[in-house]
Structure formats: structure tokens, C-alpha cells
Amino acid sequence: MAAPPLDALKKDVDRAIKAGDPEKIALAWRAIATGHPDTSDAAEAEYRLGLDALFRVKNMDQAGEHFRTAAKAKGVYAMAARSSLGLVLLRQGKPQQGIFELRKVAGTAPPTILSASAWGLLVVAFRESNNAREAERARTEHRRALQKLIESNVAEDSALANFMLGMEHKHDGERAPAKKLLQTALDSGKLPPAETAAAQKALAEV
Image 1 (spheres, helix red, strand yellow):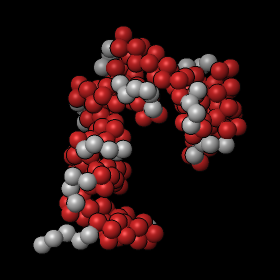
Image 2: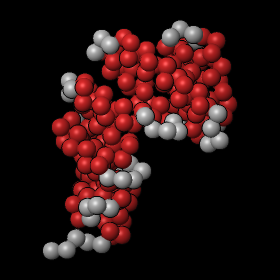
Image 3: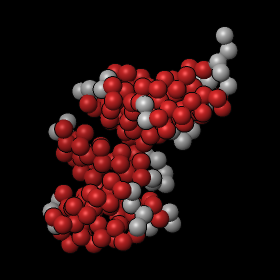
Image 4: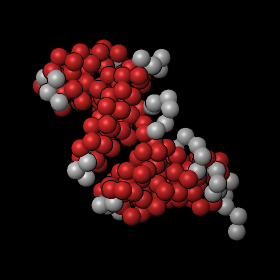
């Protein structure tokens, strides 16, 4: 039996999202993933299903399977899925595999917000593996990537990079640069709501 047309399935996703029903949303994404494999929409569906399995269903094995499938596909969701897969593997106590996946994302050139975030996750992974030298190297690359993104012509990327680097300085007890970067991020007006709230809270603490 042939799968319903892709356009019809995407409308099912939209209706489920408007209804606010997470189970129906997952079912609609699953229909796209199974009915139209090897498409960019299927890759997005697998990525969304991975997030659903990770945060709602709380099944890391299932999340890992979806992220792995999405990571193999070429498209805008591949790197995000690979980064999420790396995080899942770390949480499952598989540091070598997790680091392997995160390195692929971190090595993206030119740097992106996603690759900079991957460097940040690698810092944590190396520290937890008691590999101080690699942790320090990843920390340096993390900051370098964020500094490059601050100079980006994409206002949203620059704002997020200012926020992320500001939080990094705050974590390290470096108050002056933390204040400057966080204030710049807020003044841009380009931070998403969650990061705006976090930046305001952090700024009040430094």
C-alpha cells in the first residue's frame, strides 16, 4: 500500500502541532519517516522523533537510533542530529563514541553555532574522561569559534555567540568580559526568549 502524499502528511504535522498533541505530532513525523525515506523531510522527521524520544518518552536508545538515521542523511538536520547523537552516547556512558561524533560536528568550517556548541560539549566530555590536555584544547577551540561568530554578519549568530561566550566567562569567574558580552547580546535584541532570560539572570549575578 502506497504511503499518503508527502504534502498531506506535512499538513497532518501542522494540525498536530496546532492541537498541541505530542503523541499525534510524533505519529505524523513517523509517517513521513517511514513513508518517504531518503528525503530531506524524512531526515527532519527522524531528528524530531529523536528529540521526542529523548525529552518526552525519555528513551535514550530510541533517541540514538533516530539521531543516527538523521545524521546519515545529507541536509540541514544532519549535523544537529550528529551532535545530539554524541550527547546521547555520552549520557549512555560511551565517551569514545560520543567524542567521535562530536568531533565531526566541531570540525565544521567555517564555524557555526552548532560546531561551537560541540566544542563546548567536548570540553565536558574530556574533563569527565580525565583528559585535561584535550579538555583545554577543546576549550580554546570553543572560545575561538565563538569569537569568530561574534564577528558574523548574521545578527542572530552574533548575538548567540556573545551570549555563549559571556556565559563561558561567567563560569570561569571572569566578570568584566562576562558583563560586556552578555550586555552586548541583550542589546542586540536578537536573542531567543530562553537565552534572553538566562542572560538577564546571569548579568544580575556577575
